[in-house]
Length: 468
Image (cartoon, rainbow, N blue to C red; front, side):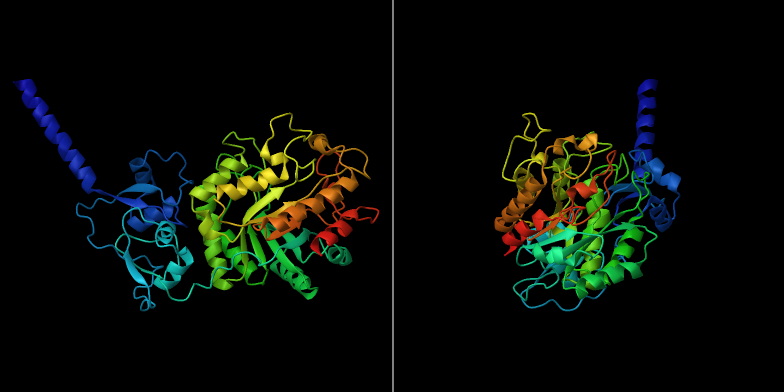
């Protein structure tokens, strides 16, 4: 009898503790720009209290958009009516003709709502007065555009196929014209000692010479340390780049490897939510005609979940995170070819496995199919390495040891023709036009160059024939 009474008292106490605990916490969903310290300040609790309530957090500097956190508020009665976040216009303009109203439910995201109503995130945000597309709340009234005018903020890719090259300057302008190229690519390392004034001069020079320009904004530090990417600062910087008037912006570079992204934090959802989506929204607000290209991945099958993800897995993660809503073109790199672009076997480094990354068409097919054929591909870097004219080749590039200059020219032309006729590759950038750096122990950039150190450019004529 005493034991039963003791158990009853214990159960009652336990129930009371659980009731108090449940009544003294609320669930908060992380939005873009959040940090644990900001969330703690917002709710008037300490960082230690949030960590204690959320034992699943092993790294207090690493949280993700959409992650649910328990906030120990100490209030027994939760607030009945949520206060609209500051990024939402309290009284949106009257809905346009043909639109409808939707009330946000638990678990909704703008991308999911856009897919449900066959519209775009940008269109809903514009119609509903939303300035932060990653921040909506339960009970919020959204205006869903209907049969009215189509939104004007998202130009897909260039209407016709265009070819360009990465170059350090315009010293070989005549070679660009000979190859039928109309685009240039400039890679800006951020943060950098270079200034926006210098970048503005580069963009203006390209336009003054009749070329369009793609600016890739990527990190400045190889093998960056954990938590070293300041997303807010990066987004603000890209906004300033957009105001300089480039024709396209590529958002980062090869973020599936630890050379470009912190080891252990490689994550496609983090890239989409913390970088690609807010950059897309910010840039389109400045100039909707700027082409936004997702950062091209390093083509690799290596995947240990810490130092690298295979581009196939990372790409699928981007798709699942809703990347299609925040890009005009999917960035692609192809720079390890040693066979004809139409080949699917025979690569010197591929003994029978036929891994897609060694071959041109299988690589394009993978990227195209991952997005179910709904998004164009932009080759922001493609090229063929040949050691011809140099003494030897770095050991890590030994697969290109037997590629000749004539093959480089023929394969560049064939790859361009395949891209041009695909119907889904509107832009291809050759790496590179005229780099002169060649390190036998490391980086053979000049081995990829179309214009060789002796001034020859066999690829220029053949590319020009394709582009005519």
